[in-house]
View 1 (tube, one colour):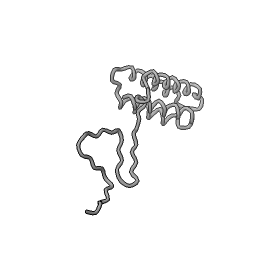
View 2: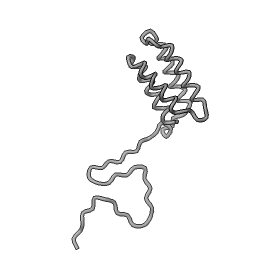
View 3: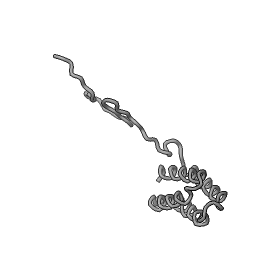
View 4: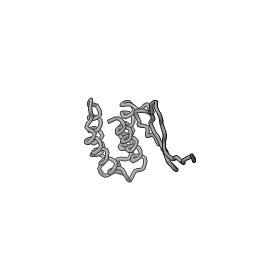
Length: 122
């Protein structure tokens, strides 16, 4: 009998557990790690939120609606203190904040980091 080329996976008996599996030509296995898995916590979110607030204060003269943006961070902070924060509310507000700070790179980066951290938790 001639050997048959197999580009798949053959398993007999036992068990198979994996966090990422790739089979076939040029296949790649990628495991996405969440912020929480990397040790992220609500304390980190609080620190990142404080950084966003500081950025907004430092660049207030460059942002025409800086007062509204600061008020929006208060809403995010209150929502994040809840046992089960409303992801829709938080994401909507973070999206509006992000849109409002696009012109200031460091503030936009701070908002993106906060958004990533929050989305990995809620």
